[in-house]
Image (cartoon, rainbow, N blue to C red; front, side, top):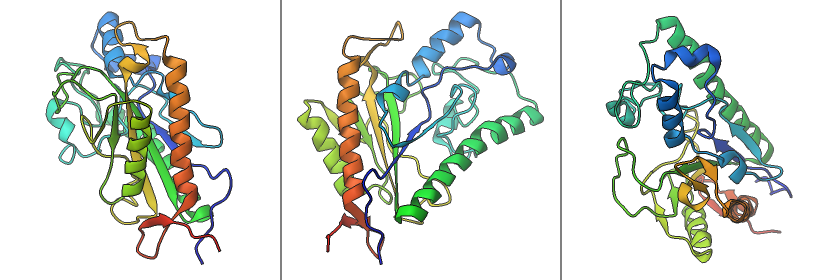
Length: 274
Protein backbone atom coordinates (compact mmCIF):
# COMPACT_ATOMS: atom_id res chain seq x y z
CA UNK A 1 0.00 0.00 0.00
CA UNK A 2 1.54 3.36 -0.98
CA UNK A 3 2.61 5.70 1.77
CA UNK A 4 0.33 8.71 2.11
CA UNK A 5 1.76 12.22 2.45
CA UNK A 6 2.22 13.74 5.89
CA UNK A 7 1.73 17.36 6.85
CA UNK A 8 5.09 19.11 7.00
CA UNK A 9 6.78 16.52 4.82
CA UNK A 10 10.30 17.80 4.30
CA UNK A 11 12.25 18.02 1.10
CA UNK A 12 16.01 18.15 0.73
CA UNK A 13 17.50 21.53 -0.15
CA UNK A 14 20.95 20.90 -1.59
CA UNK A 15 23.16 24.02 -1.44
CA UNK A 16 26.59 23.13 -2.85
CA UNK A 17 28.20 26.43 -3.84
CA UNK A 18 27.20 29.09 -1.29
CA UNK A 19 30.37 28.96 0.82
CA UNK A 20 33.40 31.17 0.22
CA UNK A 21 35.37 29.57 3.05
CA UNK A 22 38.99 28.65 2.38
CA UNK A 23 40.28 26.94 5.55
CA UNK A 24 43.70 28.20 6.60
CA UNK A 25 45.24 24.76 6.39
CA UNK A 26 44.13 24.50 2.74
CA UNK A 27 45.00 28.04 1.59
CA UNK A 28 48.45 26.96 0.39
CA UNK A 29 46.85 24.73 -2.26
CA UNK A 30 45.79 27.88 -4.12
CA UNK A 31 48.52 29.86 -5.87
CA UNK A 32 46.50 33.05 -6.43
CA UNK A 33 47.41 36.11 -4.35
CA UNK A 34 44.74 37.22 -1.89
CA UNK A 35 43.21 39.92 -4.11
CA UNK A 36 42.90 37.59 -7.10
CA UNK A 37 41.49 34.85 -4.89
CA UNK A 38 38.87 37.24 -3.52
CA UNK A 39 37.86 38.19 -7.06
CA UNK A 40 37.59 34.54 -8.12
CA UNK A 41 35.50 33.73 -5.07
CA UNK A 42 33.11 36.55 -5.98
CA UNK A 43 32.72 35.13 -9.48
CA UNK A 44 32.36 31.48 -8.51
CA UNK A 45 30.39 31.56 -5.25
CA UNK A 46 26.61 31.25 -5.31
CA UNK A 47 26.52 33.98 -2.70
CA UNK A 48 23.68 34.04 -0.17
CA UNK A 49 21.89 31.02 -1.65
CA UNK A 50 21.89 29.49 1.83
CA UNK A 51 19.72 32.44 2.89
CA UNK A 52 17.57 32.63 -0.24
CA UNK A 53 16.71 28.93 -0.25
CA UNK A 54 15.54 28.60 3.34
CA UNK A 55 12.37 26.85 4.40
CA UNK A 56 11.27 25.64 7.84
CA UNK A 57 11.12 21.86 8.15
CA UNK A 58 13.22 21.30 5.03
CA UNK A 59 16.37 19.25 5.30
CA UNK A 60 19.24 21.55 4.31
CA UNK A 61 22.53 20.14 3.12
CA UNK A 62 25.09 22.90 2.59
CA UNK A 63 28.66 22.22 1.52
CA UNK A 64 30.86 24.01 4.10
CA UNK A 65 33.85 25.13 2.02
CA UNK A 66 34.41 26.84 -1.31
CA UNK A 67 33.98 24.96 -4.56
CA UNK A 68 37.42 26.30 -5.52
CA UNK A 69 38.84 23.57 -3.28
CA UNK A 70 36.51 20.75 -4.29
CA UNK A 71 33.28 20.84 -6.27
CA UNK A 72 30.72 18.32 -5.07
CA UNK A 73 28.63 18.77 -8.22
CA UNK A 74 31.31 17.34 -10.47
CA UNK A 75 31.86 13.70 -11.33
CA UNK A 76 34.95 12.40 -9.49
CA UNK A 77 36.31 10.85 -12.68
CA UNK A 78 37.59 13.55 -15.04
CA UNK A 79 36.83 11.27 -17.98
CA UNK A 80 33.13 11.58 -17.13
CA UNK A 81 33.17 15.27 -16.21
CA UNK A 82 32.77 17.74 -19.13
CA UNK A 83 34.12 20.68 -17.11
CA UNK A 84 37.43 18.88 -16.64
CA UNK A 85 38.20 19.97 -20.21
CA UNK A 86 38.55 23.54 -18.93
CA UNK A 87 40.46 22.52 -15.82
CA UNK A 88 37.41 22.56 -13.55
CA UNK A 89 36.67 18.97 -12.65
CA UNK A 90 36.08 17.82 -9.10
CA UNK A 91 39.38 19.41 -8.05
CA UNK A 92 39.86 22.64 -10.01
CA UNK A 93 43.24 23.25 -11.63
CA UNK A 94 42.30 26.50 -13.36
CA UNK A 95 40.22 29.59 -12.61
CA UNK A 96 37.08 30.57 -14.48
CA UNK A 97 39.28 32.57 -16.87
CA UNK A 98 41.77 29.77 -17.44
CA UNK A 99 44.57 30.93 -15.11
CA UNK A 100 46.43 28.55 -12.84
CA UNK A 101 44.49 28.15 -9.60
CA UNK A 102 46.28 25.43 -7.65
CA UNK A 103 49.63 23.83 -7.17
CA UNK A 104 49.91 20.12 -7.83
CA UNK A 105 48.41 18.19 -4.93
CA UNK A 106 50.29 15.29 -3.40
CA UNK A 107 48.46 11.93 -3.60
CA UNK A 108 47.71 12.01 0.14
CA UNK A 109 46.35 15.55 -0.14
CA UNK A 110 44.11 14.51 -3.00
CA UNK A 111 42.83 11.49 -1.07
CA UNK A 112 42.08 13.68 1.94
CA UNK A 113 40.15 16.22 -0.12
CA UNK A 114 38.10 13.48 -1.72
CA UNK A 115 37.47 11.57 1.51
CA UNK A 116 36.94 14.41 3.99
CA UNK A 117 34.89 16.66 1.75
CA UNK A 118 33.58 15.15 -1.49
CA UNK A 119 32.72 11.67 -0.29
CA UNK A 120 31.55 12.85 3.13
CA UNK A 121 29.13 15.29 1.51
CA UNK A 122 27.71 12.73 -0.89
CA UNK A 123 27.38 10.17 1.89
CA UNK A 124 25.36 12.72 3.87
CA UNK A 125 23.11 13.36 0.87
CA UNK A 126 22.64 9.64 0.34
CA UNK A 127 21.66 9.18 4.00
CA UNK A 128 19.04 11.92 3.75
CA UNK A 129 17.56 10.46 0.57
CA UNK A 130 17.41 6.98 2.08
CA UNK A 131 15.76 8.42 5.17
CA UNK A 132 13.05 10.07 3.05
CA UNK A 133 12.47 6.88 1.11
CA UNK A 134 12.13 4.84 4.28
CA UNK A 135 9.67 7.28 5.85
CA UNK A 136 7.61 8.32 2.85
CA UNK A 137 8.40 6.04 -0.07
CA UNK A 138 9.73 9.01 -2.05
CA UNK A 139 12.35 11.74 -1.89
CA UNK A 140 12.65 15.15 -3.51
CA UNK A 141 15.87 17.12 -3.92
CA UNK A 142 15.92 20.80 -4.81
CA UNK A 143 19.37 21.67 -6.14
CA UNK A 144 19.81 25.34 -5.18
CA UNK A 145 22.07 27.66 -7.18
CA UNK A 146 22.64 31.15 -8.51
CA UNK A 147 24.44 32.26 -11.66
CA UNK A 148 26.18 35.39 -12.96
CA UNK A 149 24.23 37.71 -15.24
CA UNK A 150 27.00 37.51 -17.86
CA UNK A 151 28.65 34.25 -18.97
CA UNK A 152 31.99 33.34 -17.46
CA UNK A 153 34.79 32.38 -19.82
CA UNK A 154 34.49 28.77 -18.64
CA UNK A 155 30.76 28.55 -19.34
CA UNK A 156 29.68 26.31 -22.19
CA UNK A 157 26.65 28.51 -22.89
CA UNK A 158 27.81 32.01 -23.85
CA UNK A 159 24.42 33.27 -25.06
CA UNK A 160 22.99 36.57 -23.83
CA UNK A 161 20.78 37.91 -22.45
CA UNK A 162 20.50 35.34 -19.72
CA UNK A 163 17.17 34.45 -18.12
CA UNK A 164 16.26 35.53 -14.62
CA UNK A 165 15.69 31.93 -13.57
CA UNK A 166 16.98 28.65 -14.95
CA UNK A 167 15.26 25.36 -14.17
CA UNK A 168 17.49 22.29 -14.48
CA UNK A 169 15.92 18.91 -15.08
CA UNK A 170 16.77 15.27 -15.62
CA UNK A 171 14.63 13.25 -18.02
CA UNK A 172 14.51 10.35 -15.56
CA UNK A 173 14.34 12.08 -12.17
CA UNK A 174 12.38 15.29 -12.79
CA UNK A 175 8.62 14.80 -13.09
CA UNK A 176 7.33 16.91 -15.99
CA UNK A 177 4.50 18.25 -13.86
CA UNK A 178 7.03 19.52 -11.32
CA UNK A 179 9.25 21.34 -13.82
CA UNK A 180 6.27 22.80 -15.66
CA UNK A 181 4.59 24.00 -12.47
CA UNK A 182 7.83 25.48 -11.14
CA UNK A 183 8.46 27.40 -14.36
CA UNK A 184 4.84 28.57 -14.51
CA UNK A 185 4.92 29.86 -10.93
CA UNK A 186 8.06 31.89 -11.68
CA UNK A 187 6.52 33.29 -14.86
CA UNK A 188 3.45 34.32 -12.87
CA UNK A 189 5.83 36.33 -10.66
CA UNK A 190 6.94 38.15 -13.80
CA UNK A 191 10.28 36.43 -14.42
CA UNK A 192 11.95 35.22 -17.61
CA UNK A 193 12.54 31.49 -17.23
CA UNK A 194 14.46 28.96 -19.30
CA UNK A 195 14.67 25.21 -18.98
CA UNK A 196 18.22 23.80 -18.86
CA UNK A 197 19.70 27.03 -20.20
CA UNK A 198 22.29 28.37 -19.49
CA UNK A 199 22.84 25.42 -17.11
CA UNK A 200 21.35 21.97 -17.28
CA UNK A 201 20.66 18.94 -15.17
CA UNK A 202 20.13 18.40 -11.47
CA UNK A 203 21.88 16.38 -8.77
CA UNK A 204 20.87 12.82 -7.87
CA UNK A 205 22.92 10.44 -5.69
CA UNK A 206 24.83 7.96 -7.83
CA UNK A 207 23.24 5.01 -6.01
CA UNK A 208 19.84 6.03 -7.38
CA UNK A 209 20.80 7.74 -10.63
CA UNK A 210 18.69 6.43 -13.51
CA UNK A 211 17.66 3.52 -11.30
CA UNK A 212 14.89 4.72 -8.99
CA UNK A 213 12.23 7.23 -10.04
CA UNK A 214 11.06 7.58 -6.46
CA UNK A 215 14.02 9.95 -6.11
CA UNK A 216 12.97 13.18 -7.79
CA UNK A 217 15.21 16.18 -8.31
CA UNK A 218 14.95 19.67 -9.77
CA UNK A 219 17.52 22.46 -10.00
CA UNK A 220 16.53 26.07 -9.39
CA UNK A 221 19.05 28.73 -10.46
CA UNK A 222 18.49 32.43 -9.79
CA UNK A 223 20.26 35.21 -11.69
CA UNK A 224 22.50 37.01 -9.20
CA UNK A 225 21.67 40.43 -10.60
CA UNK A 226 18.20 40.05 -9.10
CA UNK A 227 19.39 40.01 -5.51
CA UNK A 228 22.96 41.29 -5.28
CA UNK A 229 25.61 43.66 -6.56
CA UNK A 230 27.75 41.18 -8.46
CA UNK A 231 30.85 43.37 -8.42
CA UNK A 232 30.79 44.25 -4.73
CA UNK A 233 29.45 40.85 -3.69
CA UNK A 234 26.79 42.45 -1.50
CA UNK A 235 23.03 42.10 -1.22
CA UNK A 236 20.95 44.69 -3.05
CA UNK A 237 17.70 46.33 -2.00
CA UNK A 238 15.61 43.60 -3.66
CA UNK A 239 17.14 40.78 -1.62
CA UNK A 240 14.33 40.38 0.91
CA UNK A 241 11.68 40.46 -1.82
CA UNK A 242 13.48 37.79 -3.86
CA UNK A 243 13.88 35.66 -0.74
CA UNK A 244 10.13 35.80 -0.05
CA UNK A 245 9.35 34.81 -3.63
CA UNK A 246 11.76 31.90 -3.45
CA UNK A 247 10.18 30.76 -0.21
CA UNK A 248 6.82 30.83 -1.97
CA UNK A 249 8.30 28.82 -4.83
CA UNK A 250 9.74 26.24 -2.43
CA UNK A 251 6.35 25.91 -0.75
CA UNK A 252 4.77 25.15 -4.13
CA UNK A 253 7.44 22.52 -4.78
CA UNK A 254 6.83 21.00 -1.37
CA UNK A 255 3.10 20.97 -2.09
CA UNK A 256 3.78 18.99 -5.25
CA UNK A 257 5.74 16.48 -3.19
CA UNK A 258 2.99 16.17 -0.61
CA UNK A 259 0.24 15.73 -3.19
CA UNK A 260 2.09 13.36 -5.53
CA UNK A 261 3.30 9.80 -5.20
CA UNK A 262 5.36 7.52 -7.46
CA UNK A 263 3.16 4.82 -8.99
CA UNK A 264 4.16 1.21 -9.62
CA UNK A 265 6.28 2.31 -12.60
CA UNK A 266 7.88 5.11 -10.62
CA UNK A 267 5.98 7.91 -12.37
CA UNK A 268 4.93 10.70 -9.99
CA UNK A 269 1.15 11.11 -10.01
CA UNK A 270 -1.38 13.10 -8.02
CA UNK A 271 -2.57 11.15 -5.00
CA UNK A 272 -6.23 10.23 -4.95
CA UNK A 273 -7.42 10.44 -1.37
CA UNK A 274 -9.70 7.63 -0.30
